[in-house]
Amino acid sequence: MISASSSVIEENHNVKQLKDLKPVEFSLQMPTAKSVQLAADFTDWEAAPIDMIRFGDGIWCTTVPLPPGTYAYCFLVDGNWHHDPKAMSHRHGAANRAGAVVKID
Image (cartoon, rainbow, N blue to C red):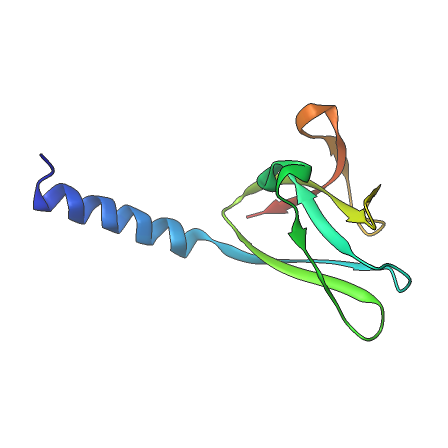
């Protein structure tokens, strides 16, 4: 049986987790692409990539709320892996996949 006080503690923990999320913008200039998706360790790579939105200048963007941490990511451009040319560093992510790295403080 869950008591009222444990429910309040759990609810407060969930609210704190939501407050810790920071909006992180990912973008890629790819004017000829038909589709661009963000694949990362936080999307289980190609299992659940995030569709990006194309703007008129050929820049594709998405914003993802993430908790502090270090994450590896790549882009799927028309189904093909593409590294972020603006990334400051790279590392091997899950399944030995090389990806750009973003660090959220």
